[in-house]
Amino acid sequence: MYKMQSIKSLFFSLCTIAFLLLFSSESWGQNAAAKRAYNILDYGAVPDGKTLNKKAIQTAIDAASKNSGGKVVFSKGCFLTGSIEMKSDVEIYLEEGAILLGSSDPR
Image (cartoon, rainbow, N blue to C red; front, side, top):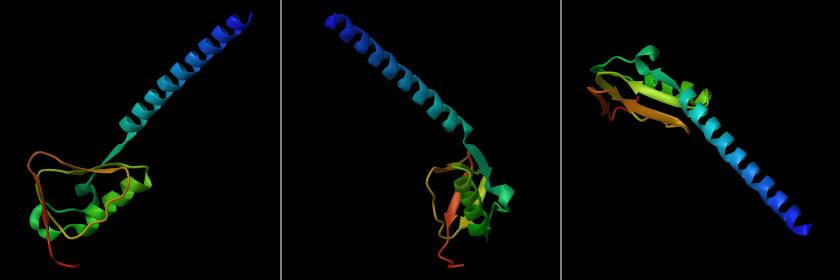
Protein backbone atom coordinates (compact mmCIF):
# COMPACT_ATOMS: atom_id res chain seq x y z
CA MET A 1 0.00 0.00 0.00
CA TYR A 2 2.78 2.45 0.92
CA LYS A 3 4.61 1.67 -2.34
CA MET A 4 1.49 2.46 -4.39
CA GLN A 5 1.12 5.86 -2.67
CA SER A 6 4.77 6.62 -3.41
CA ILE A 7 4.27 5.78 -7.07
CA LYS A 8 1.15 7.97 -7.24
CA SER A 9 2.96 10.80 -5.50
CA LEU A 10 5.94 10.50 -7.86
CA PHE A 11 3.64 10.40 -10.89
CA PHE A 12 1.77 13.49 -9.69
CA SER A 13 5.07 15.32 -9.07
CA LEU A 14 6.39 14.45 -12.53
CA CYS A 15 3.15 15.59 -14.19
CA THR A 16 3.25 18.85 -12.26
CA ILE A 17 6.86 19.51 -13.26
CA ALA A 18 6.12 18.69 -16.91
CA PHE A 19 3.12 21.03 -16.90
CA LEU A 20 5.12 23.87 -15.34
CA LEU A 21 7.96 23.45 -17.84
CA LEU A 22 5.56 23.41 -20.77
CA PHE A 23 3.60 26.40 -19.48
CA SER A 24 6.67 28.49 -18.72
CA SER A 25 8.19 27.76 -22.16
CA GLU A 26 5.02 28.78 -23.99
CA SER A 27 4.57 31.92 -21.98
CA TRP A 28 8.18 32.97 -22.42
CA GLY A 29 7.92 32.40 -26.16
CA GLN A 30 4.73 34.43 -26.38
CA ASN A 31 6.28 37.30 -24.44
CA ALA A 32 9.37 37.29 -26.65
CA ALA A 33 7.24 37.20 -29.81
CA ALA A 34 4.97 39.95 -28.50
CA LYS A 35 7.84 42.44 -28.15
CA ARG A 36 7.11 45.38 -30.40
CA ALA A 37 9.48 47.18 -32.77
CA TYR A 38 10.00 50.94 -32.33
CA ASN A 39 11.51 52.50 -35.45
CA ILE A 40 13.34 55.70 -34.53
CA LEU A 41 12.16 57.32 -37.78
CA ASP A 42 8.66 57.26 -36.27
CA TYR A 43 10.00 59.36 -33.40
CA GLY A 44 11.51 62.05 -35.62
CA ALA A 45 15.05 60.75 -36.21
CA VAL A 46 16.78 62.01 -39.36
CA PRO A 47 19.30 59.65 -41.03
CA ASP A 48 21.58 62.34 -42.50
CA GLY A 49 24.63 61.99 -40.22
CA LYS A 50 24.35 65.67 -39.23
CA THR A 51 21.14 66.00 -37.22
CA LEU A 52 21.47 65.17 -33.51
CA ASN A 53 18.93 62.37 -32.94
CA LYS A 54 19.42 61.91 -29.20
CA LYS A 55 15.86 62.95 -28.27
CA ALA A 56 14.20 60.78 -30.93
CA ILE A 57 16.28 57.73 -29.97
CA GLN A 58 15.68 58.24 -26.24
CA THR A 59 11.95 58.69 -26.83
CA ALA A 60 11.83 55.37 -28.72
CA ILE A 61 13.79 53.63 -25.94
CA ASP A 62 11.47 55.11 -23.29
CA ALA A 63 8.37 54.04 -25.25
CA ALA A 64 9.67 50.48 -25.54
CA SER A 65 10.50 50.38 -21.84
CA LYS A 66 7.09 51.75 -20.86
CA ASN A 67 5.46 48.93 -22.85
CA SER A 68 7.44 46.10 -21.17
CA GLY A 69 10.34 46.21 -23.61
CA GLY A 70 10.87 45.87 -27.31
CA LYS A 71 13.26 46.44 -30.17
CA VAL A 72 14.41 49.95 -31.10
CA VAL A 73 15.09 49.79 -34.82
CA PHE A 74 17.58 51.89 -36.78
CA SER A 75 16.79 51.80 -40.52
CA LYS A 76 19.37 52.35 -43.26
CA GLY A 77 21.14 55.67 -42.80
CA CYS A 78 23.57 57.48 -40.51
CA PHE A 79 22.16 58.52 -37.13
CA LEU A 80 24.11 61.00 -35.00
CA THR A 81 23.46 60.79 -31.26
CA GLY A 82 24.79 61.91 -27.92
CA SER A 83 24.53 59.84 -24.74
CA ILE A 84 21.41 57.71 -24.41
CA GLU A 85 20.08 55.82 -21.40
CA MET A 86 19.33 52.17 -22.05
CA LYS A 87 16.47 50.49 -20.20
CA SER A 88 15.73 46.91 -19.21
CA ASP A 89 14.23 44.62 -21.86
CA VAL A 90 15.02 47.08 -24.67
CA GLU A 91 17.10 45.89 -27.61
CA ILE A 92 18.91 48.12 -30.11
CA TYR A 93 18.68 46.70 -33.64
CA LEU A 94 20.64 48.12 -36.57
CA GLU A 95 19.27 47.11 -39.95
CA GLU A 96 21.70 46.55 -42.82
CA GLY A 97 23.21 49.90 -43.81
CA ALA A 98 22.39 51.60 -40.49
CA ILE A 99 25.17 53.52 -38.76
CA LEU A 100 24.97 54.83 -35.19
CA LEU A 101 27.42 57.70 -34.91
CA GLY A 102 28.37 59.05 -31.47
CA SER A 103 28.73 62.76 -30.79
CA SER A 104 30.52 64.59 -27.99
CA ASP A 105 27.93 67.38 -28.21
CA PRO A 106 26.37 67.58 -24.71
CA ARG A 107 22.95 68.71 -26.02
